[in-house]
Image (tube, rainbow, N blue to C red; front, top):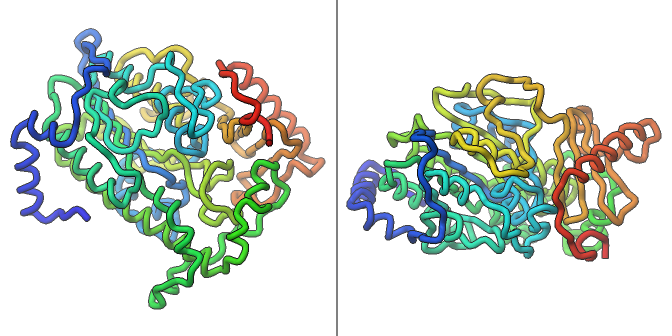
Length: 464
């Protein structure tokens, strides 16, 4: 764990400031392959910090009302941000979500429709785009975009990383400090900082299957989630999870499920400490008041809800993620936006908007800047939000309903998020809701026709 005593802060920061070239070379490699261009028209736009986590659900924060976790640092960020409550990932799994962030395109367009598929080479990413428009670009932590090496996108890249947050997140926080202390101050920066936790929960299932080892903490175990008795009328691609894909979960007791949830929340608290360190570093720097910060996660974690683990489904615990945006003195603070539908596809155009540059053609997101700076009901904001999953899955959300369908499956899902936020009843089987299903299915068809989709193999788009 990082020590923040005054003596340690003094000695470490003295080291980090000892010499720009020396300090940066200890943490980063310079890339000559990444674009580097002049600022347009002599502009001096703000710095851009994209701070992202892995597998953090919207509901897994104390500022969002969860009583089983304490996240004081993320809560502090929420108090000085606009916190978008209706924020969804473009795809609830790692590589497709991250490829969508960096290209502003859906997985069916950028070719990363599954974790092992390579990014289309003709699509620029935000590191390349901002670099060629005068920004100093740096990546720290998790990237996970197959087919796009870091050195092609960012001017400064880390020497190495570790696939577990337990070992890497402290180093990521320190590396951001090293960068901020020694950066090129003749240019604004774009820093993508990717922390790993609470993704380490993927290693915890074998621990959770055993009795909880801390009797004095037994009262901290969460009970079964309120939607543990889920509606079993699911599309085949999701029902397979409950029908034998994870047989080893069947003997789990309420204690085992509570043990798993408890482990997840401890990992959230671990990463919250590193978020706090990064926030402290920024707030104590001269860059603080001139930095736009976007905080989010690539996807959530089922965490026992719907009697499921992990992600890669459209239920809110997996697909709904926190998104907070801060820009001191320029946007309001402490606002929870419960109205506007926000996507991870919106980050690229937002960065371009604040940088004062045009976005690449074909981006599917919207700049958040109008929402951030007071136009609370812009006429051009979306009525529908779309997402993809498992290559064949499509989700559309409006102000009240979520509709889900998978190519190759006759079973669809419709949830009334206003009256059934736990998604316990699939209304697609109710005759009274068929007109809503038809309207949302037609919206998916309309949206699909606007996409520049790649050809995907049949085994990805159909149930095998």
